Image 1 (cartoon, rainbow, N blue to C red):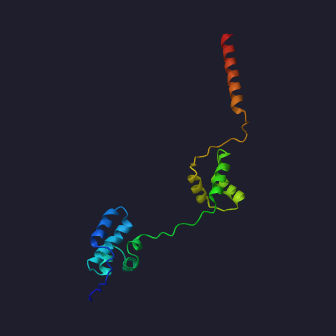
Image 2: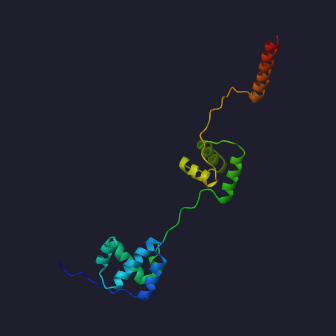
Length: 174
């Protein structure tokens, strides 16, 4: 088996400074792992050996090595691309929130249709639930409402109860 090739690693900061950064960033395991990788390279190990030791592929090891040599510590920080902008602007979301406050109970489907009608934007039911959650609204199990129930049902029930009590009292006193 042939000897592994050892590459010249750019010592952009002293090993002591590297150790200080490692201690400071022990909570950020992504950067920490990369700094350990570089520290092992400082000890004149090959990229392949260090990649195996740290638990990453050779390709990842070489990518970290190149990023360190070209950009130093900044090159080791994760570069998140960000997310897609929302289909609704913040003003539209605020307008939607106000519309939803006008009625007590909404189904996800109703909110989905409202967004489509008012703003011309199509969202999946999953995304509508995420928007509602961001508004601080919670899912509640719906209860059935009897469409035949009159608006003054509670008043009628109270009147009937009072009448029955009066009848019972009259029967007792006879």
